[in-house]
Length: 238
Image 1 (cartoon, rainbow, N blue to C red):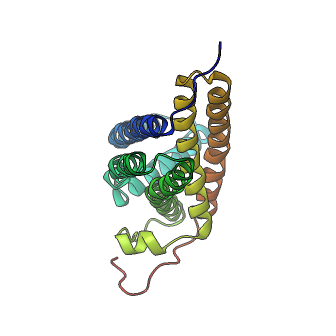
Image 2 (image 1 turned 180 degrees about the vertical axis):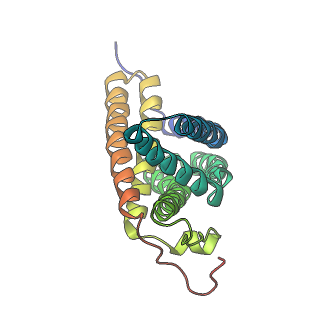
C-alpha cells in the first residue's frame, strides 16, 4: 500500500488548526492554574499557621516557621504579579492561525512551509518570553520577601518593562518552546496523513525537548531571583 502524496495546502491548513488547539489548551490550563493557585496557597498558609500555634516541639515549630515564610513569600509574589498577566498568550491563538491560513491560500508551496514556520516561531515565542519575564519577577519578589519583607522592590509590569527587561537567554528559551509547539503540531498532522512513524518521531522529539526546556527555564528563573532588571529607565512605572 503506497502512501498518498502530501498536499502542502491541506497540510498547512491542518497544522493551523492543530496549532490553534494546542495554544488554546495551553491558555485554558494557564488560566485555570493561575485562578486556583492563590486560594491553594492561602489554604496552605492557614494550615501551617494553625499547626504552628499548636506545635509544642521547638524543632518542628522552627521547620513550620520556615514553611510559613516560603508560602507567604509565594502569596506576596502572586499578589504583586497577579495571574491575569499570564493570560496574554491567548491572543497568539488567533494571530498564529491567521498567518498559517494566509500562506495556505496564497502560496501552497514548500517555501511557504518554511516561512510559515519561522513566522509562527516569532508569534508564539513573544508571549512565552514575556511569561518567563513575569515568572522571574515573581521569583525575585519571593526571594526579597524571604530576605527582608520591608525591602521589596515593586515589579515593573508594563509592556515596555516586559519588552526591555531580562536577557537574551529568555528569547532563546521562548523560541525553543515555540519550536516544540510547532513541531508537535506538525507531527500530529503528519501522523494523520498516514506517515505514522515520521509523525511519532516529531511528536516525541518535541516532548523530549520540552521536558529539557522546562528544566532549563526553571533553573534560569531561579538564577534571576537576586537580580532587579535590567529595565528601561525612561519611566519606573512602565
